[in-house]
Image (cartoon, rainbow, N blue to C red):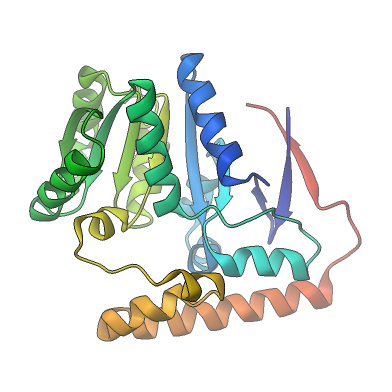
Length: 256
């Protein structure tokens, strides 16, 4: 049994980065399996609009606060989350842990060019890491079953999906078990960051919750309107929840 915190009707695991990495390593050692879901402000907004996305996230064994805004909203609404567990940071911590523990990984996502660049970077940073296989993230829904089987055949113990929402959540919900991986973690745009295609915001920007703005400055046409609308919707959600909330413990029990 584990206690989970409830925020906007979504159950979140109140774990630190260190605790999350340890949980993943324990799962691999016990040959069990765990699916990790990450939520930021935009995803929480989109989950209210997309039932399939909401169902996929709710089905994850661990659901973590990927965005600083989620941690702050939790504090305002009485839901205590110890810290932000950013997807890219968890990705890097797990790669390092996998190298140290001799755990094999599979990398699924991004364009082939980006994937190749990232694999080269991984080889330089983690020379002893066992990469069981990789594939770009451009495929039809009809190919998902075959891809899951290929991942299973590779024997990978950790699977990282560098795809956008809701594609990665839907793949994980439908085929995560079939891949045979002990740990399945959707890392979004982390492949682009590790490949050097996208620059991550400086730490100071991250700490004040402006990583989204830094990304917008890099791709204003693609991300500007999206972030403005979702951030405004998230702020409105938080205000409404604050006004209408009722006293509660803010926790929910769940076993897995």
